[in-house]
Image (cartoon, rainbow, N blue to C red):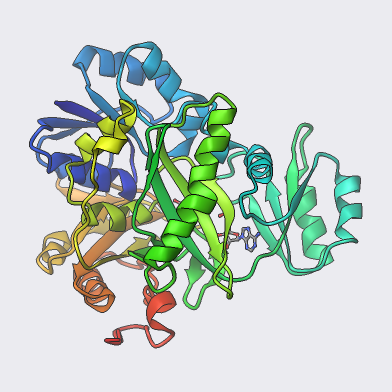
Length: 431
Ligand code: AMP
Ligand code: GLY
């Protein structure tokens, strides 16, 4: 079987790598892919953008692609799944209607409120004056969320009125803009991803993403600077069962009540409060990046079988099997990320990095002749595995040490949410 992976980040590299381990998968095309995916055996990049829906449908039809997997949210929200289905092409991911779960924060909030899913209280506004007036009844910090896709930049946690007003002004700058003003929920964040075929959903091991740029969770939000799974220091098996019955099952039922069949990944971004209660902060309609780079290495099943079962509505027949132990990844980013960053920095030492046993996923690279160059904000993602989280982290950081990438930035405290603040450069405690 030939498969097509759409996207060009670390998540897509991990998807292609995992698909290639299946005996059924003979060849993978990636559109547009990156410098690392290109180097995978039996993998070929195709010069089509992830949002070139027409071009991708044509390509998949001509090539006879039997499984397409969509990495990023934008083509999903634009309706790539509907277009593939109309052409009779099997594709993993939610339809345009279903992808509103990520595409519109207001729509998702309404769905949660109707279904009684635990989430922060929030009110929607389209007018600045009404939104500013509402602030007077709120305590701080307060969370301002711009509606619609914002590539990780649409949320402000405002510490005071002035910051909140500024965020509201920015979020309501154009006619038609809408915003949510949301109660701040304290706690620790965890990403719980579920596979669904529209009828049932099956939860994947919870993962913890390190979203802030700086060590100790400081600085601006990023796409994610590292992750580890399973996040069992925060979510026990009982906690995960509760998340299924209180959050993911009701989400699927609420979609069904709207006449929407959701097939793909539902990613619930949760806050676990100090008393242990889970609240939904946001939904995403796809695998997380870098969560995929720590979840997929733990999966034993051939990925194509699992994804096809979702597409074909027979997920109940699949028993997911997980490797024991942990996976942890560290993202190496270009200087300047997440703002404007340099591109074209030479990157080498990846063979040496792989000798540590770590998985080397490319996030933003391109091949220029024999030379690999950085070509994005997040450039590499190194995933270590081990019987303990400490072992997995040691392997990931050992790989980082082997990479030659001038001025690379990475966090040296990935793992600290689970192992405590003692995790810092070169110090990984054994619990
Ligand atoms: P999101 O894009 O929805 O993931 O939001 C970005 C970040 O803002 C999250 O990762 C949280 O750290 C924070 N955040 C969002 N909503 C809330 C909330 N209601 N309470 C506290 N923090 C939040
Ligand atoms: N790691 C956060 C995301 O994929 O949205």
